[in-house]
Image 1 (tube, rainbow, N blue to C red):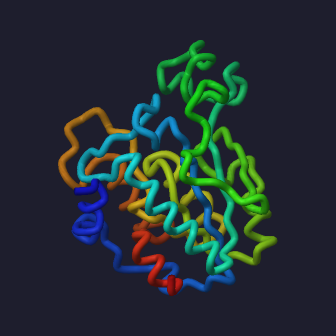
Image 2: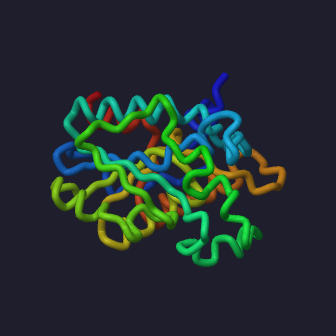
Length: 233
């Protein structure tokens, strides 16, 4: 049994998916963003590995649907971009992150800082030479990056986002993209969220709350299976 099964069986119980910004998908106007699929969160034993809670996916289990989406997009000639999240060990780009996380003065050894291990992509996911890979120091993949330029050059008005994590980089990217009138599509079985530290009941916790917010206000929540069907893969 996979941690993805609960999503496939219960997504419409927990998310009102009545209205869509992208009821259909035109591959010629679409880009895929592979979001922060880094070892620290997606590989068992990683320093920030994401377990399943509240029926949300587990870090390791989202790799396969991300890979399926990536391969299908390449086959359909949908352009791909990749993001990597991390902070400087000296904290110069951290803003208030270290304060909020209670790690002031500790970024030099923080696993989310570049060079401390785990910031690499998982082994099963490899960019091609013509697929841009960019670093970012904020949760949004639009903030301080060239993602808008990549989309504009590709003629894309729709961004499909596959990767981690729901309560941080997925929702921040969805909000920023929607604010710029991009059609945002988040794939629920390709993402997971850091546990709240509480006993999250099924259908609750950061993962589900973020997905509910995204579909209610910022874009569409699909599964990878639904997306592949929509592009005829």
